[in-house]
Length: 134
Image (cartoon, rainbow, N blue to C red; front, side):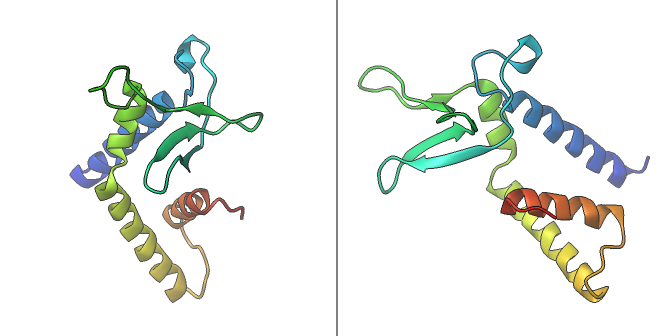
């Protein structure tokens, strides 16, 4: 494994571990029987604030951000959710957007044909972000 491929695999493994840990919407982690939730959504409470929720197809979902108690308290979230959110910060989002743009350019140059597994994988990422199906 080369230095670049090792970096890619390490990042993928880190992101996969963080995503798996963050996919539990309840206080109980998945490995101890917690309920998995693979999608999150944001609901505005006022015009400039709101809450992050784990999606629940059977109800309103679990709020991932929690208000503190007391006058000087700040909202917080479970460590596994915060670690995942930090890993997927705006810099990560911009890097992923760049990879998606580069892949789109490649597909356009190939006449709209998806020719390799990397392009196919990034197309899966795009469809997940867009909430669409093949």
